[in-house]
Image (cartoon, rainbow, N blue to C red; front, side, top):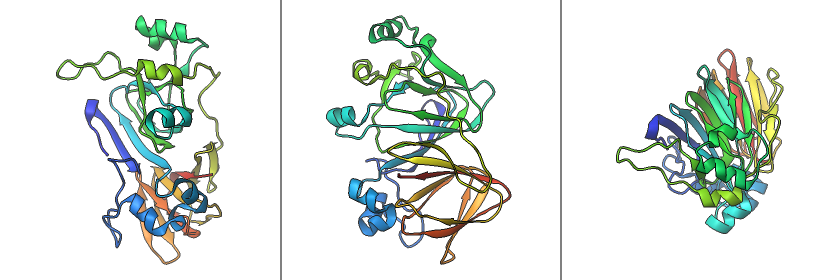
Length: 297
């Protein structure tokens, strides 16, 4: 799914969301959709636990987002509220900054603790941006966006986004932008009130270690674990988890070679998924490369 609205490029890399479902692009399974593949291969593709819990629904939505202009300020409901209102999962997500222009920023959370009344007052007075936490960002910065946490991607930021399979977003402010017909985008002021997390953290950025030729955990939750793999030599990977592995290339170029000598080339800004049933394979970088590694816990 690529959208050019407001010059915002958004690529849905692996998706089971209705209307934007991933389809195999080549090989003997060309044309098959992600749910069709899960129906055929079941736990061999996604892992036993994942198949038992989600069936033919794929549990994650994997994206790259390249924001040329600031995205709207928004938040997502948690599982319980999303199920009650929308018959959907909630949307916990994380961001990894791949590239950022000078002075580019992300909005994550509030600056100071506040209550509903104070929030609504700022919303009404158009001073919402004054109470939000704004961080200047650079390549390698990571943010975990729990449900209810207010957030927005600033102009000039390219990032990888990993999230639960859900397309439920509550937009609370859109910079008073109008389209060509003079219309404003729909806001979800009322819906957001019950979903907003007003708590405040001293910092929202995730600190992590970054070892060479070893997957280093960045962040995890009940929905996904994400590690970073800096690789400058061939590595043999053994998947001991009961999960598929998703690789998002955020630097350089690698080849992924399976035991039957099936080679997948992964360049910067590309994503691939290794089925749970493939337990051993090799990652061969072209010089130094960097991959995000995503699994289901």
